[in-house]
Amino acid sequence: MSGQRLSGKDIDFMLGALLVHAEEVTLNIEDNTKVTKSKGVPNGWVSGDKGASGDITVDTANLQTILDAAKQAGSFSALEPFDFVANGEGTTDKLTIEAFGCKLRINDLLNAQADGGEKLTHKLSYDVTSNDFVKINGVPYIDAKEIQNLI
Image (cartoon, rainbow, N blue to C red; front, side, top):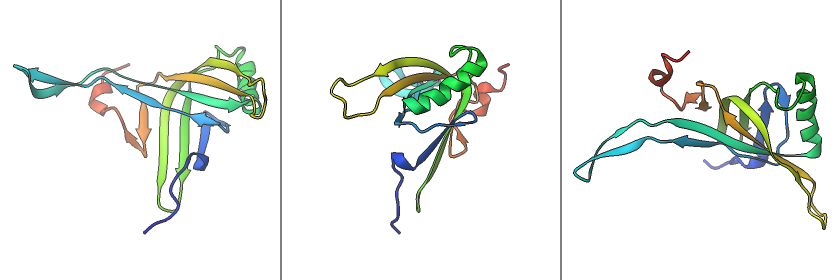
């Protein structure tokens, strides 16, 4: 059965309690799990450290929404980490991506094209700081055994 597949315009994006329209959103996972070798031949694997980060590109109106929250916090750098939730649903596909404890920082404050023709954009970067890490359609990326003794 064919139907509507997901595209970027089908994704709703929440920064904590704020609904933000993003021009572009990325979330990248770094997983340093490695293959072990014996005498140069693969022989199992070892778990490595994990991390996640991404970028959010917004227009000026949506930057102002984030700045309003920063003003309430006292400054941009005082913004508490937020949970990032992206939801999308087509007629045949459904996707929910959650990243927990995302700490924002400004990457490209201004991206202005001198010849015009495109709206002004601003890029914010973030790092995932919570051991809840990332869930994809409710499935955790990190195994519960890896975080069970963390405080």
